Image (cartoon, rainbow over all chains, first blue to last red; front, top):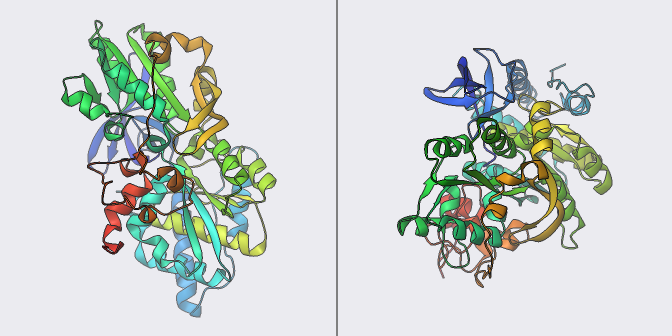
Length: 108
Length: 366
């Protein structure tokens, strides 16, 4: 029930006074209500739960998280064993960010 | 699919697992609150790859499982009425009430329909003005915005024959209740990512402080779960208890303020009984006075409900993390997804269903 899936916004339109979108989920197309993310643009990714976009997917953050994981893998390969905490601090700052914007974990 | 598949990469998973093994020096017990995360953990075998003594306790975050029996019985009574079209998420159809389930009522000719979204139920109501269309509005904070917006739309579009049977539940009071329990073994929490996508992080800081537990907001894919576990272990080992966000691509610290505003308008906090667990103060949402006319409980005066729980079912202990599903004598015998005794065996988020799908061969026949 709390599962939600990222999809890419294809078109945005008004229907019965509500902002709706057609969203592509890896080939499957579904109609999604954008009432909670009115500033969404075509081409952006949104996270969809029971027909509603509940959050936008921050693509830059997604890529940075993956890059951080990648870096941990490379470090382990290079040094033979894991060492240090490459992004513990950045994550804690992201959680504590007071202005409401998440800051992704950025590799130092 | 983009932004899903990348977070299941086996090489990166290995790297994260290595980090977890290196960081762990003693046994720890971490609860993943969300049943969706439980399924992902069991399906991918993540719990079996962790260091010995690093235990994942499965939490009560399965809305279908914790919906109180009395509410299920009330739903069944409403669904039986000839003027009612009863709409629900599919998970709910096989959840056992005291005597039968929605599936039985449907098979006996009742107008019970599975919908993908509550908006679909509103469309049915608009197209069938002579029917009373009821949507079974269950779920955590992730699902509540959809149900809230549907009620707002019903009023705006003037669809009077729609109503909502509401049984929403809230994560933070459940975390508090788990920590207050004398039987509590939980030392840290993986918080449910998509609940926080809606509600943000602010409710979790006081919990982490009061109970001195690390809380790490975690996603659902294997790498997300491993990173959540890694960060929790690092905090436990260092003696810290903070809120961290390991799922920043989907969780801004403030959540979704537009959704929060509508939730505040449409719902109000109420005490809620959790099936198998008991009453937790302030742990639910019901429709506010402003939207009381859309409340199915008021519209259909159902009385005389006498609940009757299966004496064999131990789902309450499973939901509280006191036993694993396979420790129940009925697991895979009297209780299967086809003939469930409890809701935890039905739902795609129930721990018993997860173990039955992926682990039932591990249980030695006796």
